[in-house]
Length: 327
Image (cartoon, rainbow, N blue to C red; front, side, top):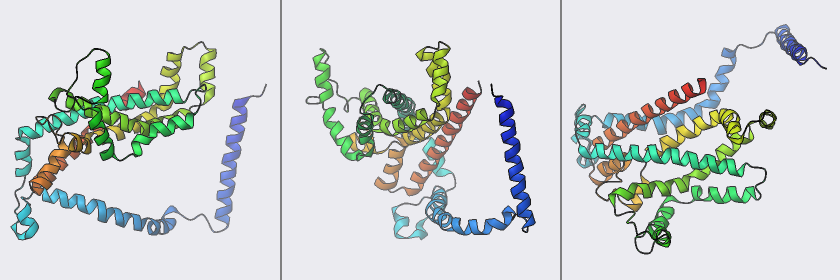
């Protein structure tokens, strides 16, 4: 029997010897160039992208931060000299506005319910499509991914008809089970769940493809070893699939939650924030402040408060997932 440990050690020693030989050869030819000597060329290659990022990202962000400390409005658009420095007044007024807290609650409701639901549906679909017995995998992946690349406005309009109280497909299905119709978009209790349902249907295909890629990167030998040891399907999922998917799961969770905190188009197209402001999100509130009432400074303050909320939520997710992976 071959001693794999010894073999690995020999390979490692040979690799180190090879690296040392190459390094020695480089020194004999005048020495390897230090990283500092190679950096100028790398900077020149990176410079165009860095300049564009600075102009089209950092400058607007810094300008928005400056606007959040002013009363920039429609009069200042005509003449910037009308702009006045107000310090933290926009932030204090925002925190004292009941509508902002309602929008923040709606946003958290959407993100904390819709985000995990979307991730769960995506993972379930990926696990099903990754099974060997499933046929026409390419067709199913295309069908499930199609809603993600469809225009959100068109999807929202179609779903408005599906949610229609009298002629909608959902109420028709409920009627088949003897249940009464639901005013999905006109009842404050059902408006947000209806938007969550539509958003999960539209977005789960993207995360599903990422999960499939992560599942295919897990070595099949681990599953075979678990079967030989008598592990059940749940034990293989708990002790092989989830640890193997951990980096993918972290990535999908972070980008999904960031995207769900930026809820805007769905309520804007389907409910305009109603009924009774039950679907008004923070981003929709920012849009109304900036482009309906032209309080640009106030809208900029809303944007930076949302940025802080998303930053805190992301850091909490990363901390919880690090603790889970270390456990």
